[in-house]
Image (cartoon, rainbow, N blue to C red; front, side, top):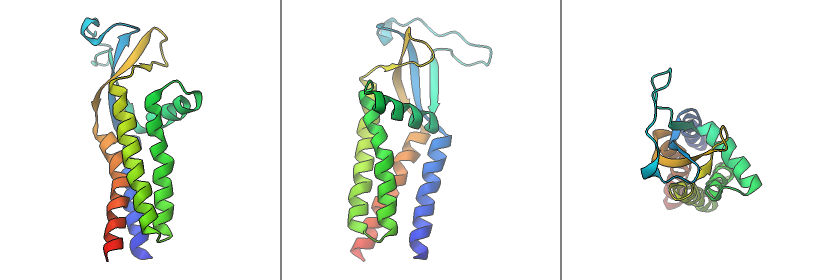
Length: 162
């Protein structure tokens, strides 16, 4: 019992870190303009480019939920990795390691494919209807977010083979 709590706790720490760190870096582009024809960004008062936006994990979780609810963002399907991950944690705590491994693996696949599909889809920019967000880079928070269910899947496989 003690080991399961420690493993779930470590996984939840990874998940919590992912929610607090920047996960995805987006280019802010005028609507309908290809990335190659986009105007160069200006440096704003904070010394950052104004045409780049990095989203933290908690922002993505909220935006993904709304995108899924309203059905406007195909990459929002990656949000379904969150409840699938929580289900894998519950199954792991109940010692149902095979189901936990399957659920966690599905969470990793959903999370990765759903998020990476944003490289091909433009996302609406909530702060401006005249611009769109184009995914530019996956940041450390994203990889920690995927590491949380992967860790549960890995430990479940280890428990199954013992």
